[in-house]
Length: 301
Image (cartoon, rainbow, N blue to C red; front, side, top):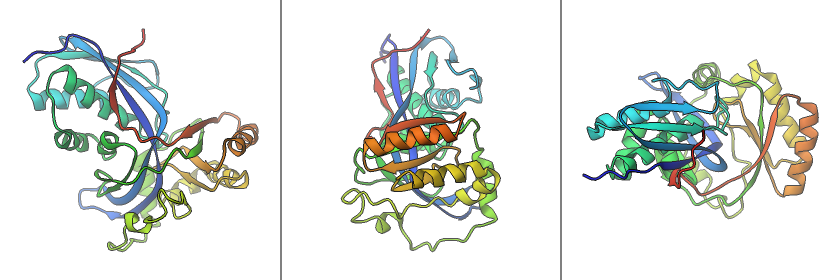
């Protein structure tokens, strides 16, 4: 089987959760959830090139590049699945904050599966990549679909939804992260199981994307996180005061985002909130229909 002797790139978008319901703890220690994922135009870039061994370098010194990294784990999993003897020299350019609830690590892993599948000539179908992705993390399968989608089970059972459209968001990223494991543990203390017959997909019918009414959105992880990080609650409330139609924590945090009707109100909110929250990064973003995808390789030195 021939192998393309070239560098391959992958664009790896971030996500926000427009809704996240925690339904209960599973016997395996994870939680059953029901969520609405939305890809956004903030992304990492992964470049892979033929090599004898697996290696990873990253331009963010805070990110470990050893065997614990999700990109390395994805590469090793795919290598074993495809019985591949080659390695790959991989370079990761990070723009998505670490431990921010934006799915950067999961998206990077999805990008690695796609780029290495091409590099190694495996041509795996989407279903196979999804199953491998679910072994790596609950969010990874979403990034193989992208756009707007419902996630069930651990979040790894994906059902595409109509694209929400290029909605405007303001991301507030504090100078600290939140552990997903901690956020779910804290949520257990407040957990009121949602009836299994309640469907986010049904509850959003007719609203998404026709009316773009996101007021139905909640995040069941917020309460436990906000109790320990009240600055996140204050920022969420600040977004609402500044005109956001809705404001939520994304995933397990620490990023908090607001949905705005127009770019002018978003800019004014960004200026006001930046002045009151020194040390925070405030980034404008838009919803996109994209998944992690193979692109022309760029890399970095």
